[in-house]
Image (cartoon, rainbow, N blue to C red; front, side, top):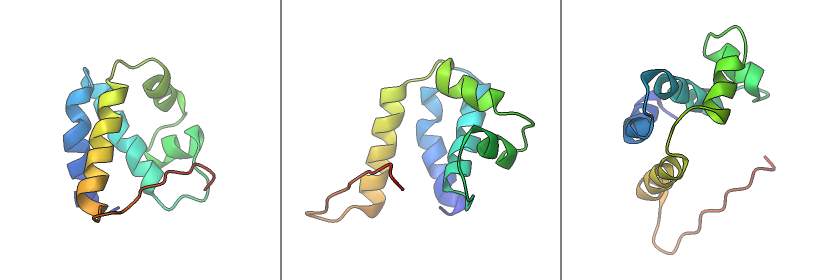
Length: 96
């Protein structure tokens, strides 16, 4: 994902986070997900963002106050707007 696209996605979802810390960490998390890392887990995503442990990423996913459904909808809408084609089908598969 080109950084401009990452910025646009983050701008779209930023309002779904009540506090600035989780908002910024969410950007780093997504940036790590689209980075060319060999493995993607709490440690590698934290290291990619310059953190010394995965604690912050884990707090984001487990306890931070954010609109999970809203972020999902925003990301889905972004993908459909930028990658969609009439009659196309999007299949999300976590098996890699």
